[in-house]
Image (cartoon, rainbow, N blue to C red):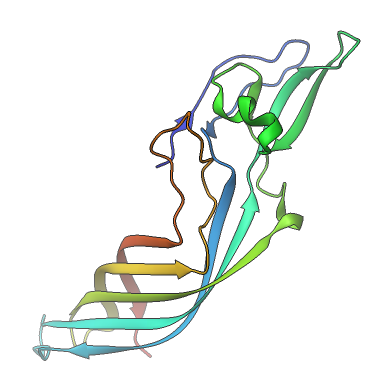
Length: 188
């Protein structure tokens, strides 16, 4: 579980203001999925204002993309009193910064920081959903899907820092998501 932190303070000798960040996060994870599936209806739609009820499923391959999570950290350069702001990713050597709630952290770095360090995690996915479709002959498509999706990878997805300082943080190779999908469109 991620916990967003925010310290409202202004950095000395600059006009920068702190930003929020996620406590004890070491990586961000994104998933690209390719799969095959099917949608089956259990009922037919009535001609006017009808509702079709069905289910859909999908299975396939995953490509997990893991990107380091960088924090902007305020430091005073050694041997001087010159303040510097650096972007740092988690390492065991700087664990006290990522796990301490200190004013050293300005906030999360920009999203683009770490894009050149992406790592790929192969895996599989499966999803199943209940499908509800309104109006068989309406010009506009209105459908709703609610379901569960499971992503399984070859090894743990290292999103959070696992440390004895955080007793319940545990990464897993299996990620389970509940989803709600609203589909709106125009029939051709």
